[in-house]
Image: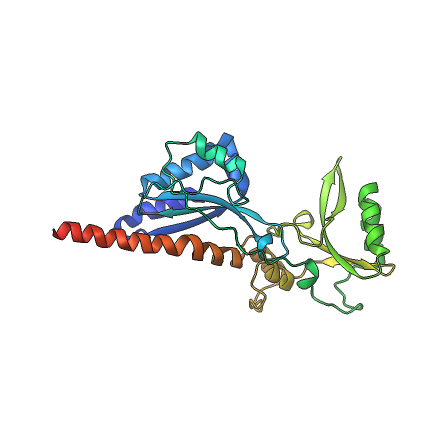
Length: 282
């Protein structure tokens, strides 16, 4: 996908945007020993962009663990190395990549940590009545429980015996050739994924006061976890909504990046272009 994006940029020639923003999984930085990310950055350099590079997690804005690698490219190179601190935005492993690729034209700005708006899964859960058909029937719940390892079974038992109802998410994994369920130990969602099957969809485990209730996460909950609680979901099936939202970006993260990283570069590019025109006139 990146190379198609780069091809379009190249074909735009003088109409290329002043600033670009790309998103990928953090493992992009280690894919093929880091060569995949290096090749992408060098291509962007060749197209006239100096690049900032950092990691941001949706967890800072919504109750979803979703770390993502972001690249911001600007057409006005300043050779900045201001972003030299090791922080959650540029952890040690990312600095090692930057240092190993000194010939890449980086533009590392000093990035403030975002304001953490910590919440919990219960903040986004739809309150479905107990007789809603989306809750799993007892036989399916029993199969869920039977698949748990000893550690996971103990975790569920603690949730069930809690004096309040607690919500957790669970993923279906393959361990030792068999499908098992694993429940998160915290009260946030795991990273949403493109819904292609049971192993990519998260289940909601609502337990407490001696009871256990389980169901699949709903499209509305996906939307809330991506920071678009009022997104219109009519006109698509539930699976289509899960598919689209699971592969989307978390909107508050992109809003924050736009404010602290994209807009300043747009202003810088505008100033560079004005200076270039003035120089040409002189």
